[in-house]
Length: 368
View 1 (tube, helix red, strand yellow):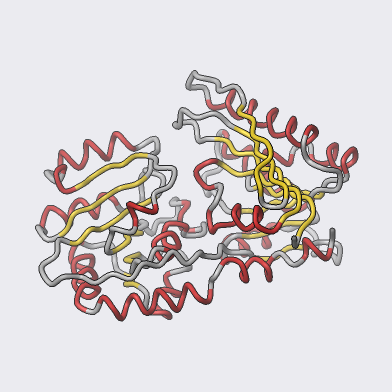
View 2 (view 1 turned 180 degrees about the horizontal axis):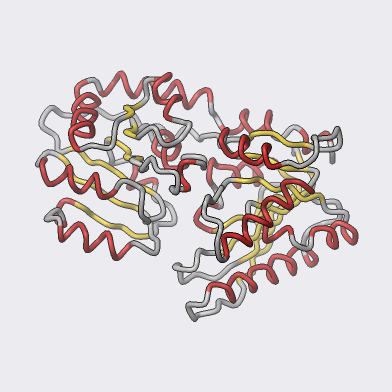
């Protein structure tokens, strides 16, 4: 095993993004994981323990059933610290993606010699209400922790600029984007086939579903399948009906293991709206990497940094946010589908998650 003792914490819906959780399970002698759901999911939080790749323990925590997110968040913090003190071994690395779990890090570090790693995957330009508190925490631990990772180039640029003092030799900070697992399934397109477009992710505004619905109104050769849930789930189900494309759009809701659904798609859509208040501008484009893993060419906008990778590897099309541009990209991919799949294979080989994380997380062995 490459690593000794790790405690990994992440939201349920993103717990295995980039296959990082699987990577830890496969490569850690003693691994504790804690996962908690978004407020809209009626699921409990839970802790799991793995020894040399095998699960040896699982415990679910009490689920607060009322729609009061602040109480849920407080409970998650309590459960997180309980699992840390109860199950994590002395000297463990603690990897978190939410600064709230860093609040008591100095205490736990004193008693258990834990080493916190704050892996920053989000930046929120809104700075009022709870987000003001969240951003303050993020800035505090970005400045104060020894180990800080950034999940995208823009997040690294923003948070490095916030530092009030020069980085010292003691500090380990680097950009660690997500690797990919090759789930590639080669498929051929029949000339007259009805194309299956796919969307996967949290259902919220600014993800381009409005544009996809508008395109479907003008086209009878495509259907759309949507995997994911969110606070805007019912809104978009109704919007599809209102736009007259309800029969062309299938909503699956949250799916724990959606691979069998994704493999039947032909093209993945990541039509992020390119506006400064869209958090997707700053984040790692996880849905794009999910599509690529399963062999899908991708259509996206210039919103995230990763559009340049799609262009370089010729594994998708980058478009303006218009119906005409979307239609043109779909026709282009359909016409030369094998060439785009070759591009997908090239990018998967370069981002293969095991060798990717071996390189990025070498410091876990050096500082064990």
